[in-house]
Image (cartoon, rainbow, N blue to C red; front, side, top):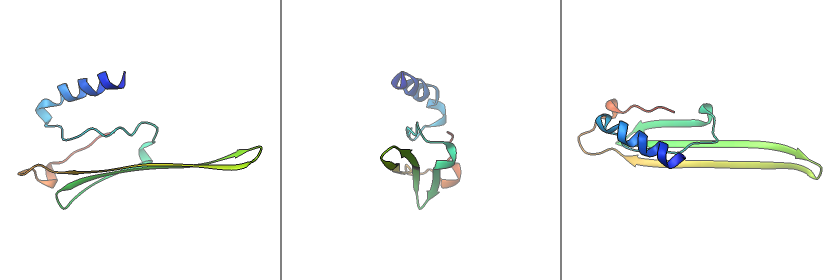
Amino acid sequence: STQRRLNRELDSSHDNKLLALVDVEGFVPEEVSVTVKDGKVKVLAEHEEELSTIRGKVYNYRNIQKEISLPPGVSEDEVTYSL
């Protein structure tokens, strides 16, 4: 399950000092941006799609926005992320 996978990630990343996990399942990497600025990590994921149906067009849009403050003493240059 997703929760077990996240727990394994947290356990295995203890030495790497994991700051946060953000679930971006359902988004492709090109739809996810991560920026580190002003002592904060900002994660933005946006997905937009247009579907044609018998009744016309249907538009789906979803997004995730997270902002995480860096702990004291952590430099912005030390932050890494992966998808």
